[in-house]
Image 1: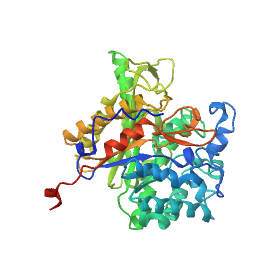
Image 2: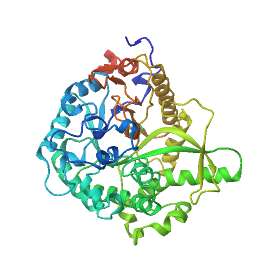
Image 3: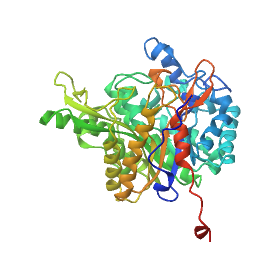
Image 4: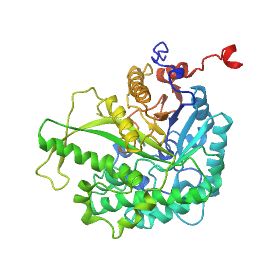
Amino acid sequence: MPDTTTGFGFRRADFPQGFTFGAATSAYQIEGARFGGAGPSHWDTFAATPGNTVRAEDGRLACDHYHRWPADLDLVRDAGLDAYRFSISWARVMPEGRGTPNAEGLDFYDRLVDGMLARGLAPWATLYHWELPAALADLGGWRNRDVAGWFADYTALVMARLGDRIHATAPVNEPWCVAWLSHFLGHHAPGLRDIRAAARAMHHVLLAHGRAIEVMRGLGLGNLGAVMNFEYALPADESAESEHAARLYDGIYNRWFVGGVLERAYPEDVLEGLGPHMPDGWQDDMALIGQDLDWIGINYYTCKRLAANPESPWPGLREAPGPLPTTDMGWEICPDGLLHFLTRLKDLTSGRLPIVVTENGLAAATPLEDRERIAYLEAHLGAARQAIAEGVPLAGYFIWSLLDNYEWAFGYEKRFGLVHVDFETLERTPKASWHALRRAMEREPVTAQEAR
Ligand code: IFM
């Protein structure tokens, strides 16, 4: 039985009026990719290739959210949350990535969005959370400049259908993962380790973001943002080499994407390495990439310690272990990093853009009492409150994730959910963190004076 006695040390009332609390998921990680006429994605083929994912696990069934979504949305509502952040699978609504849409796929998202509204949940949509249609991967995927146009057409199709009911939209989840993790480090689909491919993907993913924003503005839609992941880069020791390594890691991971989207410029230190591999004429795209946004989303999990690796060509980095306790992902628990980025983004935007923590959470395989998750969320929400007290225009906070789900190359063993999923029976059981959240989310009774 879950231990429901452990609670959070905060309540909804400790946050500003109108602050949004939500939970986040993504299509491939929960829906089940083999249903409803969805086409294959590069994650299906990546996972089918030996050695790429733990036990060759893939998202073919995942949490079967495709069939169980009403009960899953009930769990979001019953936790007392205000919003649900979900993603739309490109391969589900356009099985070939271009051309004929899959009506069944569009109908699914139609029902899902209506289901959120019926439960009083604000729909926060992400248009790309990593399942590129395999037919587009055949054409070079994110290496091919045409991907921006394909993505714009897909955006137009989806948003013409759903846009009237979506509360907030971001085109791409975590461009660093789409580009660097997948084309330079090779840990995610398509599993490339190639600097030229990486440079192209680093640019094209932002070009696709820009084209999608342009399309949505053209449809008259608002509340458009960008969701980027941030890692707090710290030097492994006090040497100048480690300082430099941390700065460069920050450039590749963090400054490249905020630079493009918020400043219309890529950082010089990263261009030193990527410049020779960039697509011709990239400079001409920067105005499109850096269009006005309505909010900015931070996905934050951890910090990294960096040192120089003189044996390696550019960027010549090495990660070192740090002293803080770690999660099941091996990631240090470092809420200071969240405060760092909230403050940094406020300064970068002169406080004019609302900021939202669009993902934060941990993998912990603990049983249902779930003390680690409660402590992690409490610490990071503490950093969020401090940021607000220091004047950061923080407007919301989404927990990753609603359910235990498919953690990409790590398969099903890393458990990020507020709700436990038994992957044999697919039974859902709320963990103590879900119960604690529900108590913290309760609204204070309105006093007679307030009601007047
Ligand atoms: O599961 C992922 C998610 O898909 C994107 N952000 C980070 C999460 C945890 O690794």
